[in-house]
Structure formats: C-alpha cells, structure tokens
Length: 517
Picture (cartoon, helix red, strand yellow):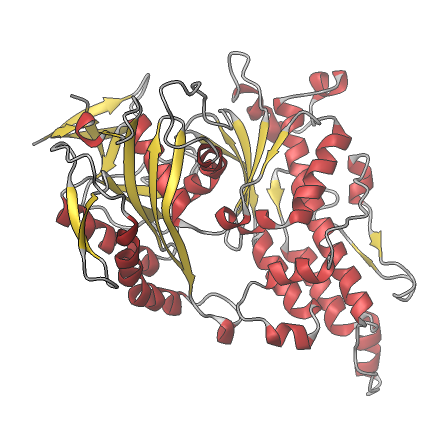
C-alpha cells in the first residue's frame, strides 16, 4: 500500500511515496556487545564507470566499520582510455563473483535475537555453513554514469533486495564523493561505541565546500545539508583528470608509459614529477601573479618557452582545461620546434630535426602542468570564499566585483560559517594538489579552513562511499527507493541545474518515505 507525502516549506520540491508497513526500528539492530547504540548494516554496489566495487558497512551512532571493501578495475590499456562497452562487460563478469565473496564477510549472528534476519553462508574452504546477519538494506549507485554500467549494478542490487526482502536505496554518485570525509571520520571512531563513549558529531559538519576532481568531473560545490548541494563552479570542456591523463601520455618517457599496468596516467605523472614528496613551491601572492605566463627554466629549456595558465583574464566561476592541455601536449610533441618553425619548414620543404625532450625537461614540464592546473582550481576556491566568507574590509565591501558571484551571499544563513574544504574524486589523491591548495589558502588569508582529504583508497570510485551515502540517506532522511527505478545517466547534484526530473538529490522519481513506527 502506498500514499503520497509532500515535503516542502513552500512550493512543492519533491514528492515521496510512503510504503507501509515498513518500520525504521525493525531495521535497527542492537549490537551484540550490549551497548545502547543501534547498528545498521548495508551492502553497497558501485558500477558507474570502469571499476566494479562492493562494500559492506556497519554503522552505530557516530562510528562505522567496513566489513568488506573491494574494487576490481577493468582493463582498458589497449584503448588508452575508458571504453564503456568493455567496462560494462567487466561488471557483468566480476560483480556477481564479488558479491559472493563479500557475503562471506557479513557479521556472524551470535545473539540469536528473533528480531535479526539471518542468512546461512557456506564457507567455500571448509564447506561449513554459518548463520550471518542479513543487511538491513541494499545501497547502489543509481547515477550519474554510463547507463550500461549502472544497469549492471542496479540489476544485482534489486535482485538482492527482493531475495532478502530488505529495502533498496539508489545513491547519487557525486553525493557519495562529497560525503566521503564524513565516512572517514566515522571509521576512525571506536567501534562498537560504548554507552560511556562521548557522543560526537560527524565531521565535517555542514556547511562545507567540496572540490570534486576526477577523470569525469571537475566541480566546486557548497554543501549546506545532506541533500542540498549548490554547484559554484564546473568545467566547461574536459575534466582535470582527463587533461592530466592526456598530458601524461605525451610527457612520460615512452619506456615508462609502455610499462604501466593500467590507464592511471595522471597518477603515474605525479610519481614521475616528484620521485620524492618534496615540493619547492611558493604560492602566487595575488590574482595578478597567477595570471602571468610561466616561463620554463633556461636551461634546460631554450629561452622564450613558457606556459599560459588556464583562463588568465577571466574571473568567471568555471574551470577550463582544454586550451591549457593543448599547449602542454603541443610542447611535449614538438619541442624544440615552435609552431612558426613548423609552418616555415613546411612552406620551404625543409625537414626539421626530430622533436625530443630530455628526462629532466619532461619532469619539469610535468611539475609545471600540475602546478598551473592546480592553481586554476585554487583560484575559483578563493573567488567563492571571498564572496561567502570575506577576510578583508575590501572583500566585505566589494567581494570579487563580479555579478555572477553575488548570488553566493544568500547561500549561508543564520551565521553559518564554512570551516572545511573537502577534496574528493580520483585526482584528490594527488599529494601535490593538496599541498598547492593548502599553501594558497594560507597565503590568501584562510589558514583556518581545514582541508579534508580522504585516504587514497577512498578517493577513487569505491563502494564504501556509496554505502555511507546510503546509510545517511536511510537513517537521516528516512527514505528508500522504489524497485521500478531506472539508472540516470545525467543527474545534477544542484536542484537548480540540469534537465527537468534530474535536478538535485531528491529531484528524481522513485523515492519512498519510510514510516517510523
């Protein structure tokens, strides 16, 4: 039986259907240790792109622990980039086996409470069957992502939900990335929490900024609640991760490139640029300094060679890496010959000497490419903070002076203050990026802004973040997802952007409001 419930403080934003009789309390299990904290358990699936991921997460109060977390990447070396068909086939091959492996890690059921659903799991090594606790619900990435890849995960998740007779929850992939530092904080708390454990709130607390940088996305978000996320800046062409991958394929020495076991070219570029994590970096003192062309050192480069930063004369809240990436690739492909050299040689039928870069030149180019790209990211963070949280009297009077940023002033209310900048996505694992952002924030007047960067294992796509986002939605928002939903290829986190029906976390069909009994 279903009926409609509208949640809104003004014009209706979204409508949730409520399913009866589904009790929230029925899905909260007491921990066997005798504590007063209730425990929730979920199995999560992530297949939005090329990685097949499954996790089992248990949460009690402010603490959480991962019972299982594994990621299997698909092989795209032949294509030097992600091929959606290869990715979806890999999911079809790997996902069921990975789920079968994961259920071996479900907690053993020892307290024999009739309130707890169990499943008998057979150990493939010993053949012995053990009663294990059934997950309280199933979490899965619903979008955005490649449709065929998403559909593999959705199908398996729905099957588990029906077979186990537990709720099913479709998660927004980007929401998972944004909430990852909160997962990391929960994983660091003692588990299980005892009744004497001081209660602590999840960190970072809302509101906070999120800089999401990956192979598919580059966005700066303001997160004010679990389901309210405003896109402050987004990329207009290729993502930062895509640009770094393409640059790496030209900069890395051919012998190193051919020896890589996967297509993590951007990660290889960082390792090549900084064999040891020692950064001789001085942040630009002001906006003017970061807009100037950056000369390449001579020697080892010939005089006159330089790189122009992305959008040097533009203060719009956008990220743009296409033109800058083209500069880098052209230099790596043709140095020491300029474009004029090549035109003149063609006109005169002259043959130029083969282009070549020494290892030292390649390493310098790798460092400069990352530095200028990362300073471009930092510049938009600074623009946003100057409007949201001015530090000088000039900022308070004038902000950035741009009309397209004036809207930001109304996003924080009631004395709310941003205390944290979250880094998420695959590129967030780059330690030089973290160093640049920290240095720029300190230089420009925001030393108190905390930089929250998850462990490397939680930066790339993973099912643990989907489990956590599902956990927060299930527990705090009290929702689940209708079994008839389909995957969503494009799904904006911002409820004011995107196509109708795909705006915001709650702006899509299929949400069901659970009854608390």
